[in-house]
Image (tube, rainbow, N blue to C red; front, side):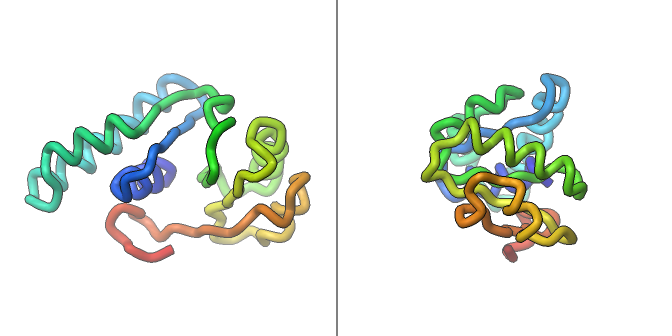
Length: 138
């Protein structure tokens, strides 16, 4: 789901930092985005130059510290409250106080996730329908 969300923001012309837990997953996420963009080019729905521009605007990393300058962070980790709470606790320390944090949860109460942060008023639910690049519904 994370790769699809990253692709959506990249297609919208935004700078994207796509973070995974380790380098093999970083490579897999990049490959998913590249394959999706290549399919769109092959179907005539995207120009090759725009695919290349999207990839240039997207940074792939396993370093969560790369999110320090982000204005918006959307997580797509497994649907477990403890996992999401731990991530948002870490993001509280990494991201600027003005950053908006978003959870892509489809089943957990956003208020419980927000309570795990030091900025509950800056955490929102932003659930993307799957596959995110195809389903234009958030």
